[in-house]
Image (cartoon, rainbow, N blue to C red; front, side, top):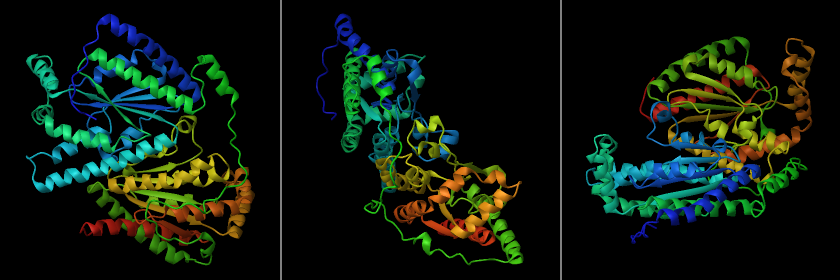
Length: 531
């Protein structure tokens, strides 16, 4: 993809205007069509250092409606971003459907650096192998990111600005000779100039293996700025026309016609029944959990034993959390369960054992308009804890395969692919180094009804019961089917489900806290640590 060839003659001003102006005008129209059609887009600029990525972005955006795009210049993560998973900062910047998100350097930058270091003779064999492993991990995360965005309907355009070695060397020399710009040339830039050939081999391989139909690369010869701008415009116009046509948008019409056609199309959010997941499997290794219908309902703990054991567990958790903080190990505890199963009280007892300064509880309600405009996992990527901190989720990303499946808020193709999207998300957390504990709080139908009636009859608890709770109870059989599918398809060795029998809330609290404590202890033990 980066084969050397003579650069085309530099375009003159008049020829540049003749070619560029209609392309720019066309892209402005396509941007508005994409807005009305709900087509989100990701435009990524990567390339050699000194290839002109910043200038290319600047020249592009002056031709766009500034209300519907955002530009992010990616640097090495610092501060809180350095304490989040590798892809979190890119997930958090994804714009909504109908908007364009432009990255001046992005997720491939770290892979390029790691691969370049792995080819350096300055590193020993162990260090070079470590850089390779890091690059592989990054690449796995990137594939998941791009695949999920494409499946959610985003257009992904990846542009690599290519310049030959002599042009790169000349541009860096110009920067170095000017006192006002010499500071921009880093040791890494010098290394790239000196080892251009080695870098080129690395980049050629990287572009080849990451050039996928849903996220293809376009290599643009960037020796001459005007030529590069025309090539970039041609790439974007072609990509938007293709993506809009694939959505059934008539791009030969006017913006008003497209807006009217989209407004007339009413999406059918209702569906008959919950569908079936019986034919689904997972690309991830799974562990058997069992069916919730087999859960016991007779497990109880006396008040005295409960008080004694609860105090001991909370004290242990407090010590363990301090050790996690010291070693910067993140902890994520995910709660799902039946209405009135006791999630709130369970979370309260867990939180009582933790340092309030380094944990947060995320109550997950119906998605906001901002969240609905993005992939469903976006709102969870933005709620992850920093390393050493704890995040507790009161309901989670599993809403996609539970309430959204049952109520028809997610289309069958959306909830069916969500199982592996969730597994990939949790695999990301595992690669990051997080401890992930997933708890299904289970309660029998009779006990649930008793608790519903108790809440209904008690003025101080009546706020806890809503018409939706009663309506959901009428669909308990559907929910049970979806829960069993969830347990079967998303219980992995690195993120297994734990079913917590909660007909007796005291028993459930002790079991949940015990599972969290044991998971922490296992991680600290694996590291050869003692509390």
